[in-house]
Image (tube, rainbow, N blue to C red; front, side):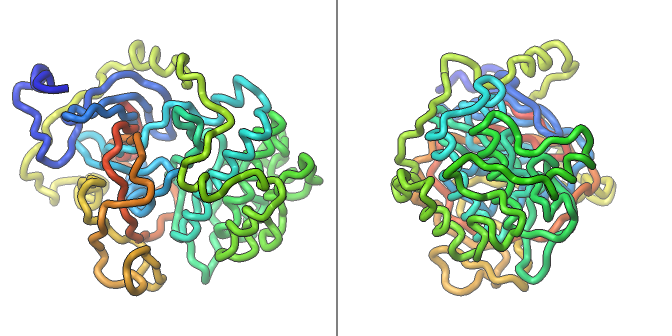
Length: 429
C-alpha cells in the first residue's frame, strides 16, 4: 500500500507504535453483533491485510473485558482468534480472524437443509474447537448457527465469546446464558451445568443444519423450555447423539480426557481423516459463493443512511487522570491494554487455585501471571484476522470469573476481522 498511507492524515502513521485505529482503513458494514456493528477494513501496512471490525457501544464493560481476556487465551484453527486489541477515547477494538464465507445462519436461511457431508465436516471441525476450549477450561455457552462462521473455503469457526466463562471442576454453574433454543436442558432447567452443555448446543446446530428446522419449538420461552426439558427426542439416523439429556451419557461428555476420542470413533465420522482435518488440510464439501456477499447487505445501507457520525480514527488524549474517570472508564483504562499477537507477552487470567497446563512449559502455569510464549504454532498458516471495537462504559450483565492461560501465537495473517469491545460493538474493515 506504500506511500499512499500518509495522504489522509496530517501526521504520518507510525507502524512501530502500539496498534491503533490509524493503522486500519475502514470500508463497509457487514453485520451487527450483540453490542454494535460489524464491517470490513484493511490494515494500512506494507503487507496487504483485510480485516473485519466491530464498533461496540456502551454498557457492557464487564462483558467486554471478560471476552477480551478469554480471547487472549485461545489459538485454534477452528476458532476466530484474537490478533490485536486496543482502544481510543470512545471505543475498544478487537482484531480477529476475518471470515468472509458468512455465518451458518445466513446459509441456512438461504439453503434450508444442508448436505449431510458438509454438516458432518463442520461438526467434526467444531468438535475439535470445543474439545480445545474445554481443555482450556472454557465453556462457550452460546454455540448456535449465528456464531459459526465460514472462511472463504468453507471451514467452520466458533466466534463470539461474549458470554463464555471459565469453569471449575469443583462446582457447577447455575446462571442462564446463551440462546434459549440451543440451551441444554440442564442450563434452561437451572439444574446446574458445566462444559457438557456446549456439546448439546452443537447437536442442536447439527440437527438444524441437516433438517432445516430446530428440534424443539415453543410459542413462548416457557413452552420452549418445557419442550427442551421434556419432549421426546427424534434424531436423523446414524447421526451422533449429542442431544442426550443426561450430560454424563452425552456423546463427547463421558470424561474430559476422552471427549474427542468418542467423537472420532463414532460411525458417522468414519469418513473423516482427523489428522488432516485438524491441520486444516481437508477440503470442505461446501464452499461459499464468493461472487456474492455472504452477509445481509441491509447492514451497509443502515450504515450509510442511519449513522450520523461514522467511525473515524482519532488521537487519544494524553496524561489521562484516572481519578477523574467514572468507574467503568477507569476499569477500561486499567484492564483493556493493547494486545498484539506478534509480540510474545500474554496475560494469564485463570484462577490461581486451578492448574493450567500450557503446551511447551513445565509446571502448571500458576507462577508469574504473565507468561512469555514463542509466537509459533502448528496453525501458523492462518491467512485472516479480525478486528473489533467497543465503547467505554457499561455494567456487568453476566457471571464474570477470572481467567488465565497462555498459548503459542501463529504467524502474522494477511487478513483480519475487527470487533469492538467497550460495551458495544461494531465491525469495520
